[in-house]
Image (cartoon, rainbow over all chains, first blue to last red; front, side):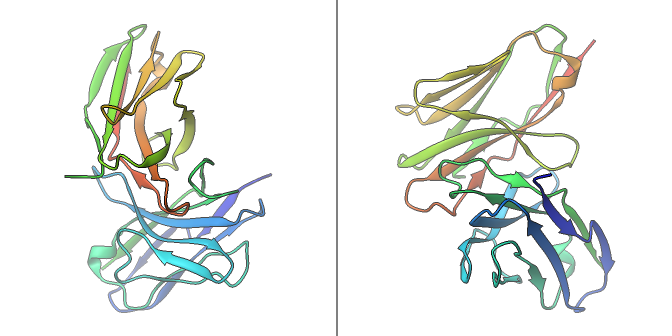
Length: 114
Length: 111
């Protein structure tokens, strides 16, 4: 089954404790992206990747890091999480870029930073 | 001004009603447009792409007005199952990785 898999689905942690949210897709997609969604707001793009070893900032990259060492994986790293990063996070992928192709989303990760 | 703006609603309509949402965008060079549906904080799912000539999929019709810089979604004969948040997505033509979502319009269809 074609899918985007995020882990963990839920995480409660404390300020300053480094964490990684993994994202993996099995569709051989070149493009991947991370979004956060806060109450009453749409999705805001954090980082995106157009291919292996090619990443770029989205609209809200501060406090986040990403890497794309393999085509299928695109982990989101919070080196020193803070309460304002409490949010619902989505990973997405697309076959040929978001310009003309729809995005496939993971189930989301609910992150709470205390 | 936000790059992509939607009326947040909520839109409360009876079953069988016709309802329309608009989404305005500020970048006149935007090239691709989509409507996604999101149920109660679950993952967004593609509803339909929006083509220049307009397109229809069953009860759903999407249109693009480049001159006025907005896209629209029309839902005919609303069903209870149409209750959701509808997100528009606008992508600039210069960067295939960049994607901007509207904040969403909430629709509730009532019996």
